[in-house]
Amino acid sequence: MVFSRRALALASQLLHNASAAGPIVQQQHLHTCSRLAGSAALKQLNEVNNEKKSLVIFDKDGTLICFHSMWVPWTLETAKRIEEHSSLAISDKIFKLLGFCPHQQKVRPGLLAEGTMAQIRQSIVQLLTEHGVDAVNANRIVSDSVVECATHSKHTLKEIHDLQKLFGDLKRHGVKIAICTADSRIGTMGMLESLGLNQMVDRVVCGDDEGAMPKPHPRNALTICADLGISPEQALMVGDTVADLGMARSARLGGSVAVLSGVGEHHDLHHLADHMVDSVGDLMPIVLGASKVGSSAAPLNL
Ligand SMILES: [Mg+2]
View 1 (cartoon, rainbow, N blue to C red):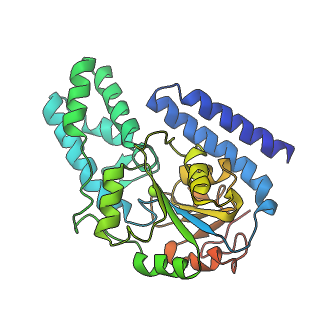
View 2: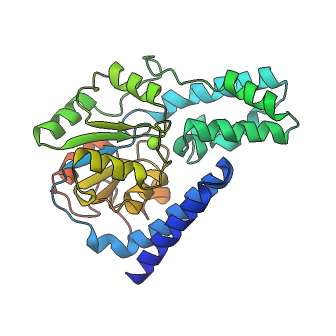
């Protein structure tokens, strides 16, 4: 217990320090914090309660909707536009920066999966300046090239599960629903509207909201809990990245569920998750307290 408190305190200090640093440093801190919080999580498993939860906080991309169908076309188009605007053959470096594998055509854990659009833009500006573009031009190129993702297109917006049914089930059991995403508010509300979910969600926090902090900082989760009048231990976080699960730990929520439907794989997530499932389709027994810690489609190896 002493170790877990020290780990969380150190993670909190690193987050504080990272807030004043550049985006790439922030991303490095994010992974360090997640590892520290993960160490703490191993010590805290016995403290996780298995009672019915009053609130579920969902990540969006990779958790509710398919990450790859949404963001792979966006990544390819963005890299192409930056090459055109900068006259630099820089796509491979952009892919590496974002965490995109062009051979597999898949997004891996990294900046695109876990960072906000502001962090992505700042990182690409930094990359361009490192390749001889002056700061004014770098900002202009990024402003012209890094645009919102097309959330209304049926080709890119694909539900991972029947979300009308899942959200309806949660509502029938009196469970509140929140979404906490690194994506923009325009993109997030567009997705909710397209899927007919906007009336079912009680609170939405997006990466570009004023005062929002990138995961795994606890602020967004604690703001959601406070706004909805629910104590953090009555809330469950569901996500596909270490940033999602790290936020659950840093905010001391009542539990976390890793889904294997996004960018994170079992070996990325197991050290931070109280439960691990294939997708949100397996979520209801955990929310209702009918599933014990660690019991899941993919059992934890602790
Ligand atoms: Mg995600």
